[in-house]
Image 1 (tube, rainbow, N blue to C red):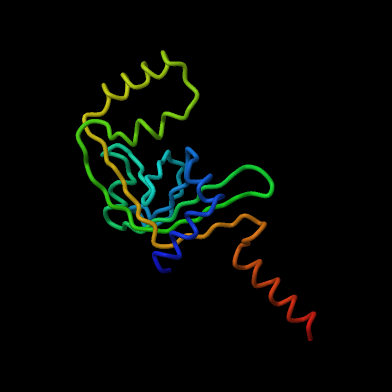
Image 2 (image 1 turned 30 degrees about the vertical axis):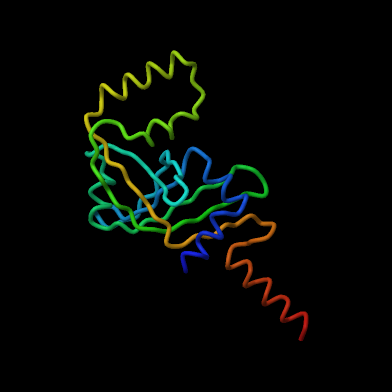
Length: 165
């Protein structure tokens, strides 16, 4: 997929709404070679998905071995809106707490006092964090209005061909 095609998909209104959500599902290959899919907070900076985690998280070693990932961001309503993204993860160990980590966790409903307590706890716990940056290499929006899963598109094409014959 060409970068301009990826940008076009990610700039659609439904994609922008999905990229503003709190949680994505990250799929990667674990150390034992089996697949993993985990929910994780994220932020979109306009060109990359940014995740943050601990240095000792199992996913960090797995992503260093095999940085190819897939992400799903979706809604819980009908018709669902689904944004599928593939890319490569780049990991950087950073001192302290990355700004993105505080941003991505800023949308949870907390009182100002809860927020202050949460942030103090986070700052006391983490000397360093791993910042995972994913640059999309492929993207597809499924909104069940203008776009469908590829397999469903194929079924519709076959049906239309049968109808014309």
